[in-house]
Amino acid sequence: MKKISLLGATGSIGTQTLDVIEHHSDQFVLEAMSVGRNIELALKQIHAFKPSLVSVTEEEDAIKLRNEVPVGVKVVSGEEGLIEVAAHTGAEVLVNAVIGSVGLAPTLQAIEAGKTIAIANKETLVTAGHIVTEAAKKHNVSLLPVDSEHSAIFQALNGESLAEVDRLILTASGGSFRDRTRDELRDVTVDEALNHPNWSMGAKITIDSATMMNKGLEVIEAHWLFNVPYDDIDVVLHKESIIHSMVEFVDRSVIAQLGTPDMKVPIQYALTYPNRLPATNSERLNLWEIGSLNFSKLDFERYRCMAFAYEAGRMGGTLPTVLNAANEEAVAAFLDGKISFLEIEHFIEQALERHDKINQPTLEDIKEVDRETRMFIHSLR
Ligand SMILES: NC(=O)C1=CN([C@@H]2O[C@H](COP(=O)(O)OP(=O)(O)OC[C@H]3O[C@@H](n4cnc5c(N)ncnc54)[C@H](OP(=O)(O)O)[C@@H]3O)[C@@H](O)[C@H]2O)C=CC1
Ligand SMILES: CC(=O)[C@@H](O)[C@H](O)COP(=O)(O)O
Ligand SMILES: [Mn+2]
Image (cartoon, rainbow, N blue to C red; front, side, top):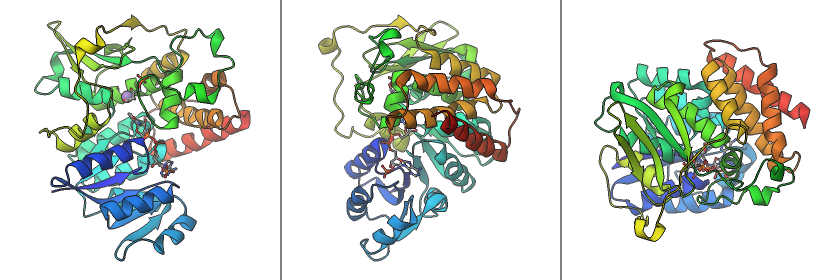
């Protein structure tokens, strides 16, 4: 039995992780989980999976939950609670499916505790990639990708030598506004932005897909996970999301990983690696039904967040932290109806331009820059 801790159990990745655990209940057991504020769903999950430790964001929710959980379930709260779940002694693998850079501290604690990390929470790698990867190396801990593109690359690299990789090619669906010009983005609504063509995901990442910041964050995530320079990471528009990403080797051979758009596949692979198990109700890929796959070049003028992300990644230091924190706050403001869609990238650009970069930032520097950037974006709203 593989014992699992799960951060973000009530989210899109979290619930699909529980589907995988349930489907393979002879292989996996949930030891600890965290949720944000969805206490109703959390309670159902606690009854179904019987973890011994549960964390919620607010202590007031913890107080309510303590009266309703079965005897023996410990309920904790706040950042300390997230950390307790992540580093839970009973678990060997942490699935980090929380949203945002709030995932950083628990990830570092789990690494120090020697857990294998199945990482969906890309913001953690973007905001502090050098710290997370150094800690993983120091503690001899594996960072297994859950993000579909990175899982594809990880699978394509299986048995290969990194020295023979020429470039990584990430695929991008183009998101909900891929058929619109920039002029047509001026008055788009939140509901339109949340209508992703291929994937059903949480709200924040769906908006990131629409601005293309998701792909920008993924370029930085790939840089840290696979130790590949930014010049050797390309992105191609591929509207079907069937090829999840590719690796081109020095001999010009390209290995791609394909499948129906279903996150249960990469989630399960991260849990079973280096082996595989039968699918958790994932559909077979029928290429004859799809007929054709399309590819086109990405226009950096149309998708300005891509340009910001490459620039921030290449410049390094605290710029990726600013990129991520500004994006998190601007997307939250858009979802709240406080700013327009195009203001998201406008705000991020301003945050990047005003920032005085710190090279080789410490964890304290990152926390401070993250906090300060969020305050700046608040002041613009
Ligand atoms: N969804 C997908 O298909 C994919 C997602 N990812 C990445 O996976 C991560 C999770 O995404 P997704 O599942 O879509 O997100 P969701 O918004 O669906 O879920 C987020 C989870 O985190 C919890 N949460 C939110 N804020 C906090 C907080 N401040 N403290 C503690 N917990 C919190 C939520 O709790 P609650 O709802 O109870 O408030 C929920 O359980 C992201 O980093 C995303 O980029 C990567 C590839 C694909
Ligand atoms: C499922 C997944 O991994 C998402 O990150 C997905 O990639 C979003 O799609 P696009 O960002 O390509 O629109
Ligand atoms: Mn992805």
